[in-house]
Length: 439
Image (cartoon, rainbow, N blue to C red; front, side, top):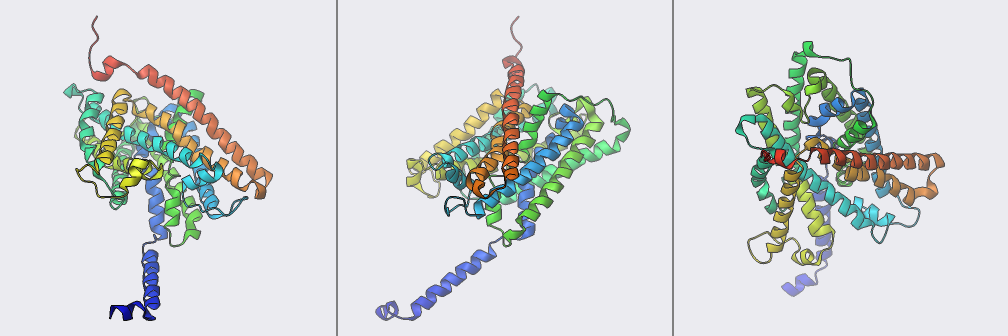
């Protein structure tokens, strides 16, 4: 009977049926345009909205203009990436589906590793920022506890240790959506507080244009728009990819309106008392404590998103022989899983150590945005586009891409220099650990 089945002409039909089922299942797993919108919205909103009033404090109305400029350029380069992935290059038909594939097409020998390493440091820095956010919020929410920011960071880092056991992206999207909702609700509560106290608003005597503050603010803003690494996955999963550009335009417009309105209206209320994280601007009390705790929970939940991306880059994308042999085996406390678990705990420990020794949320955010954020959002997409399509591009398009890349390069260099100088000034071992120096 087995032999008759093995030679049966019905088997090819059965295989076709299976293939048809797989195609149907794949189609069912595609995301709708609404889901694609929420994915892009989540990737660009996050907890970054909490820092928008601080941006306006640094730059006044110039910060609003800068938010609009970065949003426009981020939207442009995001669509540029997808164009480069979907269109044939000037050289040959290359199989391209990820940001790293474009890097390889740009520079066959080192381009893929170049993109992965840049994204690796970007995600690692985001993990560090979430821990700093927790430490900063707890330190300022409970000032009578006499616990320094660095000690709070060390304490909350215990809560993220289970991240080492995360294996799939199954629940990551739900966590991401939840954290964005909590961040928006928290920010809206602060905005309502600011509107209710509109009689305290001062809309005049704003800060003048200062290049140093603008460079730092640009880095902070870029962090809140650094979704380029996720856009290829979002577009590829869409049921109607032809609607991607329209969804990008709508998403970035809505996100930008939210960011600059929250930033400037909250700043009008608190002015020079505006803190790096907007919830800390509210006077001490039960309302501030509840909002601060919500921010801490949000940061801890969001920590798993960049950390899992970091795991994926290190274990699957960099082709490290040790991890290639392990493949995707379930993580267990045995000798096969031990290398992965050890390296994952090391990454968590390293992010904690960096957060402890540089406990300044705004300045580190500016440094990250100016460095890896600017490279991924503004520089790489334009350079990749020029290299792969220059034969078919009009001269003014090449000039515009070069201008965007140059703008990003200047912002990168200046932002890194100025934020590094400010971090060095803020670095105080005794103050950081809450220890009084011996006279």
